[in-house]
Image 1 (spheres, helix red, strand yellow):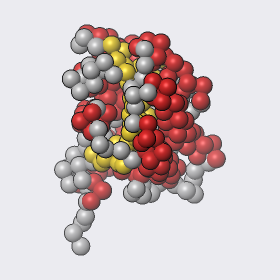
Image 2 (tube, protein in one colour; image 1 turned 180 degrees about the vertical axis):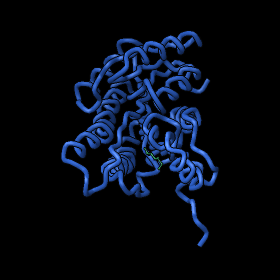
Image 3 (cartoon, protein in one colour; image 1 turned 90 degrees about the horizontal axis):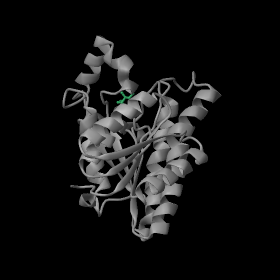
Length: 255
Ligand code: BGC
């Protein structure tokens, strides 16, 4: 088992990629803290699924855009399972608005949920790891859009661009403590964030045509890589980004 007895926090853990990471990490022996802000019933049924499969998970309703929420999650991990080994900064939103359309409120919300949470989550998890004295992993769920424009989704791209440099810089700073910091960058995944694209046959067709592998990813395909990156299989990987995107970033019309 790749994550046997490791304690893993997954922010935004009760839907989409977060939910898939919860299930995949639990199946590899991890104890999970599921963070959520809505749909407590989804969290309860996810915990039941983990337990039925012989795993351990607890839930905590916490707003990760505040330091208090992040601190509560770290405390929950320590209280429930004795320590913390992996923080997955997964929670994220997008507004699908251009630079001309985005309001101050939209900008602030996207940056707080996507980037501020990852920054201070990294800080608080790293402090806990240093206290424990045996390293740890911070895995940021970024996006191809940390490095690749998505016109019409500017604040989201700004947040993921910031995450790119958070990982590179914090990874360098924290390496001496045995802490690895990594970005996992999905392309288009079958999750609620892409519901409007999936509901529109024309949009879905052109999205699939732009992906060399010809289809969107299943959340489980992202979660599998998350488990590998969080585990000792990746012990020498840090301060960088790993793309799991079906080749979308390299897509070319062949001019
Ligand atoms: C965005 C999606 C988009 C995908 C591929 C993701 O990061 O959240 O809206 O479809 O990237 O471009």
